[in-house]
Length: 92
Image (cartoon, rainbow, N blue to C red; front, side):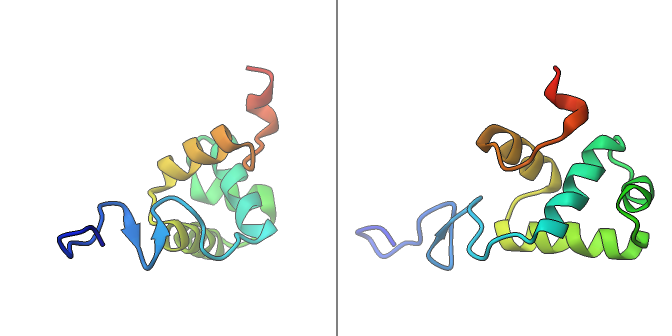
């Protein structure tokens, strides 16, 4: 809240938007990396990780819910912060 009692923009439940209040699981990050590797295809990402497409969708939805970011924003933030490593993009 600011001095006038208004809620600050980008703050949700006392966490800055884009931060993960609960840490992401290794599996969720694997699915996000597979999603990037597959060019944004959930079925192909699921095949890469060895899970069903519905499970891959759930992992991505959980990450979005934890962070308050879109999938595209998660990819950008993860690569910039270094916690999202996508081998196919590392040589670029």
